[in-house]
Amino acid sequence: MNAHKPFTAVFNLAEMDLFTSSLAKEIKAGQIITLSGDLGAGKTTFTKMLCKHLSIPEMISSPTYTYLNIYDDKVAHFDLYRLKSSEEFFGLGFEEYIGSAYIVIIEWPEKILTYLPENTIHICCKHSGNKREISING
Ligand SMILES: Nc1ncnc2c1ncn2[C@@H]1O[C@H](COP(=O)(O)OP(=O)(O)OP(=O)(O)O)[C@@H](O)[C@H]1O
Ligand SMILES: [Mg+2]
Image (tube, rainbow, N blue to C red; front, side, top):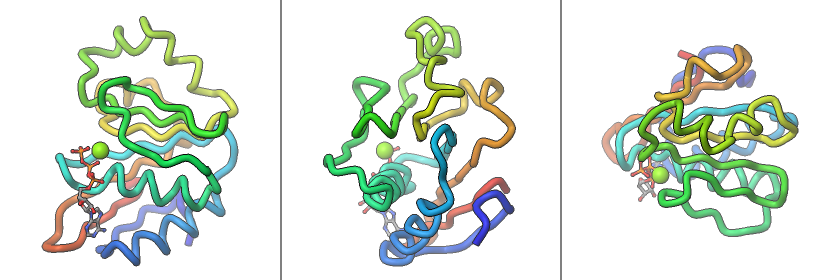
């Protein structure tokens, strides 16, 4: 599997766990990953599984009220659902994480997409019956 090649598949939870396991092996410090998709599409679940495979010890919950959680000084996890504008993102000083050594995972990235580097991995989650369709860089 190559995370940078366009890819679409339908996964149940166990398959998503396997997929995030192989993705974790490819990710290096500084990588930015966006997760788009409707409410309940699986973005936080994907993040939790990926962080588990990146050997992050803490329990992950979606940082819905804080925009940002830092895990193990290694992963910066944004949830920008409530972000009003890109100006707000920059006003909070969050650009320091772009181009940093953190692995950056961004749920609801739409308002800042144009500011992200070209090698960002863009992941889209969609409901597909009981499972989820996952597309990368598609
Ligand atoms: N691949 C999958 N197969 C089946 N169920 C899944 C899958 N991924 C996630 N789910 C389930 O979907 C539900 C919602 O997942 P999650 O909280 O990750 O969504 P979200 O995209 O982060 O939503 P929100 O935008 O509201 O925070 C959870 O109950 C989770 O277990
Ligand atoms: Mg979520």
